[in-house]
Amino acid sequence: MVAALGDALLGADKFPAVVTDVEALIDAEVSDKKGASGLALKGGYSAVKKVGPSIVPGAVEGLLPEFVEKIQPFWQEFGGNGSFADFLVAREDQVADALLGVTDERIAGSSKSAVKKVYDTLRPSAKKHVAEALPRLGELIQKHAG
Image 1 (tube, helix red, strand yellow):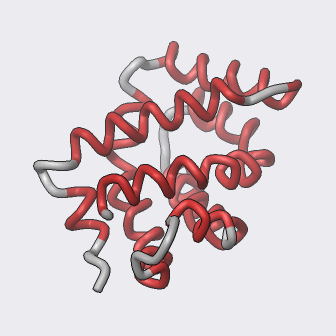
Image 2 (cartoon, rainbow, N blue to C red; image 1 turned 60 degrees about the vertical axis):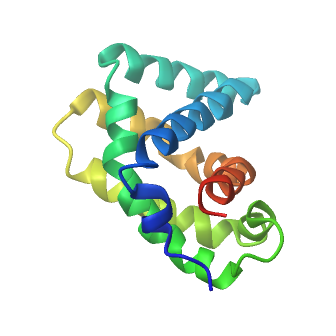
């Protein structure tokens, strides 16, 4: 039986390490982007960090419970056999849509116009970027929950 991800990732003893690892994952994914879309993503990410250095850590902390909730059904289906990264990649459309649903809802309710503007600019390519991050995300989850 696979444990609930909320217990494994959101408990007071694990949450700080998970947040740190998620921030490192985001930084690594942004850093790896190439070409014109990569430049746009890097510029947008840099702009958000300049608007407020606490935005990214705050967003990770605030969104993590909802992301974990969206990933839980995939984790249950996975059942602990093999690589969770490979499992997520094989279902990249479903997983990316589930995760982006969280940020879409959150941005829609945000009062921060600068953040909304950057998100709206980057959103058309977001699914591709989320899909590309799934190997690292799967490894991160399996590391903390496996």
